[in-house]
Amino acid sequence: MSTYKALIVDDEPDIRELLELTLSRMDVEVFTAANVESAHVSLQQEKFDLCITDMNLPDGNGIELVKYIQANYPHLPVAVLTAYGSMETAITSLKAGAFDFVSKPVELQRLRDLVNTALKLKAQKKEAIAETPETPILGLSPCVKKLHAQIAKLARSQAPVYISGESGSGKELVAREIHRLGPRADGPFVPVNCGAIPSELMESEFFGHKKGSFTGAYEDKTGLFQAAQGGTLFLDEVADLPMQMQVKLLRAIQEKAVRPVGSQREITTDVRILSATHKDLTKLVEQGDFRQDLFYRINVIQVSVPPLRERKEDIAFLAQHFLQVLANDWQMDLPRLSPNALKALENYQFPGNVRELENILERAVTLCDDDVIAPEHLQLPTDGVPVARVNPAIGDRNLPDFEHGDSLEDYLTDIEKQAIMRALEETRWNRTAAAKKLGMSFRSLRYRLKKLGLDTDD
Image (cartoon, rainbow, N blue to C red; front, side, top):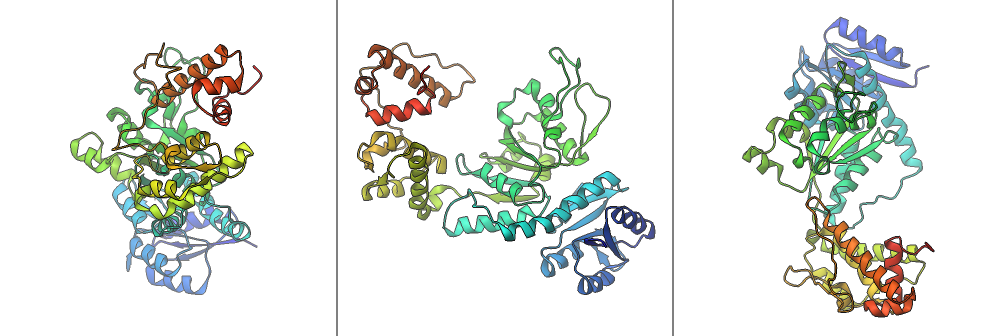
């Protein structure tokens, strides 16, 4: 006896027969309807796990049926059959709430992938009832609760999602949650920073290459699309893609296939695309720096991550969480914020958002000696200018040159390492004396040594 039931809605007998035969071989019991009215009757009489509908029906269209199912059977995934190359129709159906789409003539492997992904939702729902993991997106404010609701809804769809938000606001966390809560949770989540890949290597990184296809291609390489097969590909900082790569990415998304560099054969892909950037993509499209057709394709559904300054009621909650994590990691008493320090945080604008709050508290813990964080330990910027302190015992001697392309964070980490190593060498590795020379507490030095990987015997 079949475990799953599917409803096929199409006025063409040949299409109904093809879909029924394919799904039956997948151990799915199939019910068919030739029009919208018959589909309504079937939906009322049976409980389905999947619906596949044609776009053009004698008494209506697939979009209307998608909206009807969304309103009356919100947990039923519905896929739409569209004419080949009709990407605008497919995107319209996804915006209306369709789970996914399949182009005619139907490619059977593509259909099987879609069915398998949709049916995972039922099994996943049972697992979610038994155990609901804690979300990493923390906060009790109304806008965070709204974000959680959006994520839960988006997780059930296969539509491309564009995640907008400022740096440090948690865009990748949102992408990971959409993946974790969706039917692709068992598949890979592959994040890629589009701005970190050299333009000359971009095609090879995304699509892979064949051995000998160019100088240095000593072996076959699997691209990011292949690595994300059956899962999710997260394109972070998608605005940084060069124009030439935007064209190739658009084709890969639309055709659901990629061609490795040096290969004559395309590889079919089954990947959900999530993308994000802190830049204003709409403005970049208007300026001609980002392709409108690619923006239209990746921006089927948009979710905005609120900046921390718009949810200040979450600051105390987040601070307590980060301090608890630090206390657990360092096996020390739980540090606490003084009332004035908490007030200072709540009055701060946080241009770096949640990530900046975490870094500020991490630094403050190393500066306070009695487990009470005072305002001066936070070292909050004044008038938007970060507080800079140079210890006269260290000065700026022999600072490394800042090379183009270097990360500022890595550059500052190198300076910190050099200063600590020099102080340790000058005090013959007496950590107490080194801490005094550096103008910090012994606990602060111990923390920094561990953070920089310098706390081993070596």
